Length: 262
DNA sequence: AGGTATGTTAATTG
DNA sequence: GCAATTAACATACC
Image 1 (tube, rainbow, N blue to C red):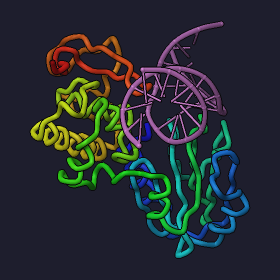
Image 2: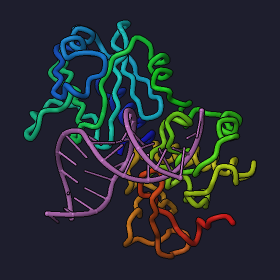
Image 3: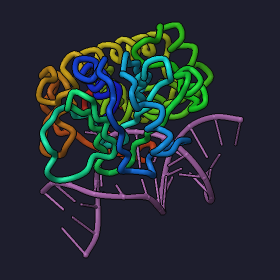
């Protein structure tokens, strides 16, 4: 799940549950997810402090621990947050933050493709990761500027975290479907008007998905997202959907509505 | 069993 | 230098 709308949903979830309670203990189960810190180091940074505010940039979530610094979470392909008291039966979470009130915030990443870090300055961390501007807080002018002079497929560019931060395989498909662009369209083929349409679709899709908590079953009927498979039909023309390989991923699209230019 | 999966990165190829 | 592809990472699901 975790693309921009999913991480935005995690942020709101954390905001409404885990803030302003003293941390009693921290347990790191997945040592290999830690970046530039150790389990005991992270414990020292968080113990006794409160989580006070959160910030999202692209697919990264930053959680502030008082005035000490920020916990950094990346959710990989299958990560999520869970807040509560019930004893988890199946499996130890990759990271558990236990609060003094008996509740805890669990970071669960079954495939362990995520990342846990700690930084004094999210801006520095973002720069060090070479992340582009967040896809949702980007002006059209900046968007256009980043696209000009580039070549290669528009899908690859949308998914490139250094170009824009936050869009992955599923939402790039949705944005291109709404824009009626063939995924492998070269950036140099896009005229000003095309770029503007693309930008507007990007904003609309990411806002709509965030508002609906990134749940496929809550998406508008006009969306491709819940239909990214060979059994479904295009919500616009009713035709068969098709897939192709681009940037090492499977792109789903409608060959009728998203025609290749030329 | 084998293929696929919402992500990132290093190595390789064009 | 840039863009695209492949393999690798670790696990779950069909």
